[in-house]
Length: 75
Image 1 (cartoon, rainbow, N blue to C red):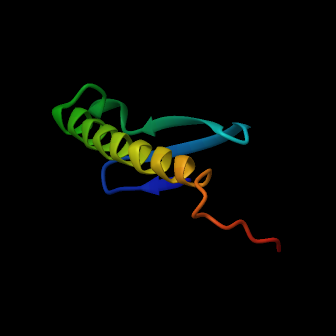
Image 2 (tube, rainbow, N blue to C red):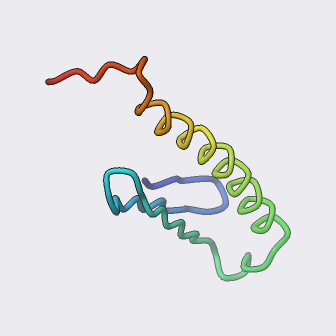
Image 3 (tube, helix red, strand yellow):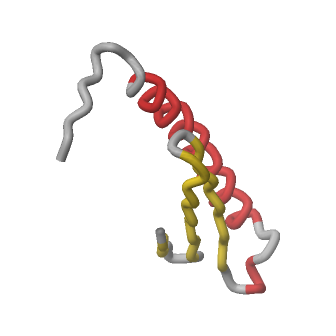
């Protein structure tokens, strides 16, 4: 995924490792003059918060895919 913001660009690279495991890599790109700036730290901290929330949601969905109430459909 390519995320374009007014002050930076980030890449989210999602690599499947197995049917139940995924590796997510986050790369940030911003002007060299902004490296280590307060704005850059805040943007990355906000992204980390969102990722932590998303991990919890994804883990719940994955767990519930194994429940008896989920019906798998063939395509």
